[in-house]
Length: 107
Image 1 (cartoon, rainbow, N blue to C red):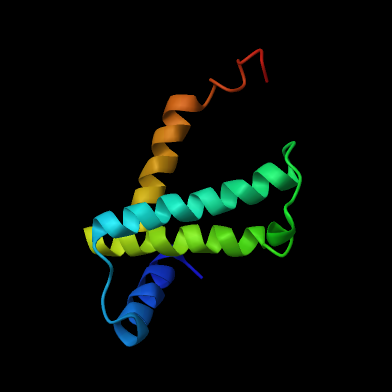
Image 2: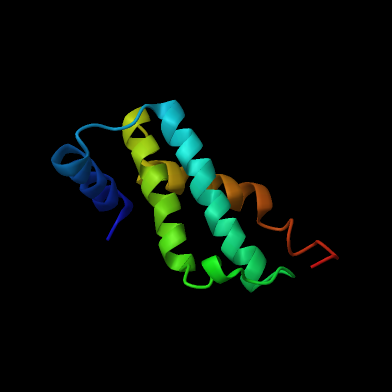
């Protein structure tokens, strides 16, 4: 699935099942909440925290998909074409960082 297809699929789902998009501020808060849920799993799986019993059944991929879902909602609401934005961002990173990381002694 492409980013364009994902944006269209989310939009169709919202129109079919969701009634309407939540407003942009609500979705920004929801995005922060979903990133927090993803961070919680990563902190327990890869960090030093142990899993709580209530966290043991959480799926990292599902939490990442929740983050992507809300990000796509925000893109749709604000008129951002994620394919174009991603391609532009990759070009920016390549031009800016093509040698930066290779020359970083810390890496």
